[in-house]
Length: 301
Image 1 (cartoon, one colour):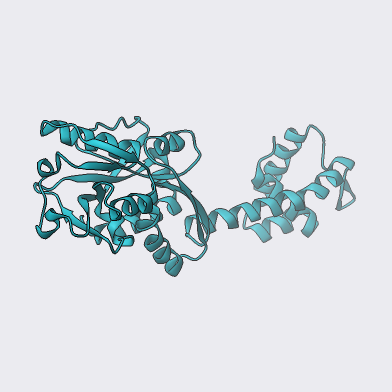
Image 2: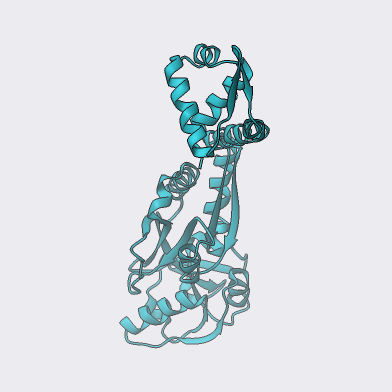
């Protein structure tokens, strides 16, 4: 209903007591002040000032507007300050949803870098496996998602979502200490055709089945769990072998477990996903930049 510029000018007229004084204070011409006050009175629908001799007096409508003008201008000033803080990265909030091994590796390092340079930017951590983490992004439950996919498994990315590759995470075979193949520098997946397997999350299990099928065998999956510590503990007790990403071994490695890279190498893609329009939000773009930097220095990249 009201133009904020007219409210500012009205407030200055009241403070200075005349159009001419307000014009000098604001750097306008007096006719410009007069035109703004006429426009404001048209918006209000009634006069705001009356002249008594050479002095101007507020009407009842003017007095009502004065009571609200301070609140209006105070709110506008607070909004301007908060928006300036956001654009200059003095403050901001970013909700990040990532899978467990990313939350244990990439995220803490990125947040440490962020805290050192931009302590006012706060990050809220969420955890979920793909594809549910991508659905949460589209539903607006988070601002940035980290997810992974495998070469043989196609990822459907909505048009409004941008995919940014962070790293390629090499897959490793976990063997119980003392396993005959543990003496090798690398292991062929076909050599494990007769083993029992400990499978991970649904997406990792699907990749295991896919890679084994490419070699002509179906793995004997004895157990399945998305808890990386449980996977390693089961392997350590000789209950099976497992395929895990290098990110997992960078923060968790059971002393009774041996890891060997696959030959030929197999990798998963770790990507960040963000709504296209959110790339223009300074805090979100900053978190994304820190994640790129951290991922570029990780094993398997």
